[in-house]
Image (cartoon, rainbow, N blue to C red; front, side):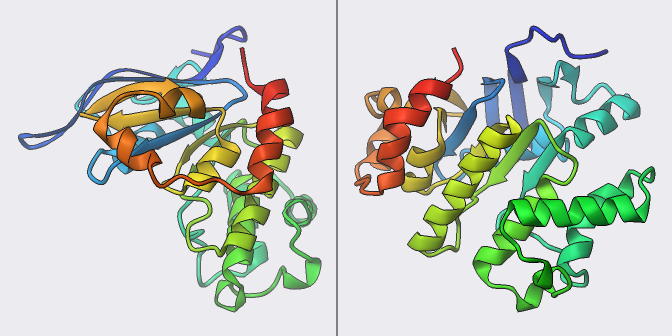
Length: 271
């Protein structure tokens, strides 16, 4: 089974249900992520954001419902198709999740080596290319994660997520733990990578400035399902207690957000 080239959606979730014993986390949850967009998933504590992300990644099976990525059923049991999904996706985990016993170089090389088809010389060239893309200088390639700053850890983790040239990128709290200046710089890097590599991105964040700067659309998870999906402006006018509370502290003063709203977003938001 392969994805239809005309399919407008990279991810399609239909009637998903998640339960832990008698506790229902998701009920009749539906969500579509369009090709080429950045969609941000927000929700309160206990709403099941992380669980949903794990289900899309194939780390946790839902009780029922369909999860399709690239038109492929995530849970159909076909190991070949599941591997093809994995090779077409990248994940930036919260706090980076670099392997502490591996150098920067080996962290980025790991997904390339797991393919078992590339010569080490090719792997070297690809690793150095990815590090250059995220502004990590060659002299840092053989440092250990413990010797990196928080911002560098995020950049190395992004290089690893992009190692296989994915079509779909998952971002889990990408700016968590960064000061405002580093956060703004990392947001700009994500936007640059999205444009350069034509990525589709699904992001989970609670940071309002990151959400405003990056999101084409926002999906709000509450009451066990996605209650609404829309642009930042559309979501802010949706009547629901969680949304009211979520946006009441939003005071966006970051110029990158204004620039994105006025130019980039108008040109690139998928129809």
